[in-house]
Amino acid sequence: NAGVTQTPKFRVLKTGQSMTLLCAQDMNHEYMYWYRQDPGMGLRLIHYSVGEGTTAKGEVPDGYNVSRLKKQNFLLGLESAAPSQTSVYFCASRPAQDTGELFFGEGSRLTVL
Amino acid sequence: GQNIDQPTEMTATEGAIVQINCTYQTSGFNGLFWYQQHAGEAPTFLSYNVLDGLEEKGRFSSFLSRSKGYSYLLLKELQMKDSASYLCAVKDSNYQLIWGAGTKLIIKP
Image (cartoon, rainbow over all chains, first blue to last red; front, side, top):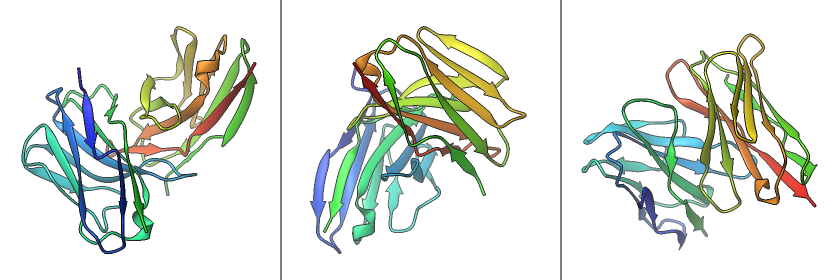
């Protein structure tokens, strides 16, 4: 029972490099989210998706892009990484029937030098 | 602006009771959530309150007062494994979750 899986778990980038974080869920959830978590701050929503082929901006979308080509996958891209994007990134999902509960992946720790 | 306030850190003794408070100011209200997050791990769902009152779930209880913009999470019979951060989140009028910074709970023997 995998739930929500994020890859990679850790990554170190140099300023200006690009990378993609992959989130995969096997619960057939409609809604998927990308958050970042920084010390002393609450989780901040980057982008989200309410279904296959749709994405929307969250609270802090600048510098990130996303795609939801398949229902089970939600990709987060950094085109030109900056030190301010050093953070822990969490993917989450939930079914369309909103019970309120989000199911989180284990997180991806990204360091940009 | 929207704001969720909770204490940064609390310390309690194994076997005791602790109450973690959360106050909120949001544009609309569609529910309040508590999540537990152990260091280096993902948040996991604890409770959901949408109506005023107390919701009890085993050793954990959550209370909500919408008129006061206030909630608390009550943990009884504390165990060492309860050492974690506790995140308060409110769903606003756009059904988006607004998260507090979390309360780090330290349990001492």
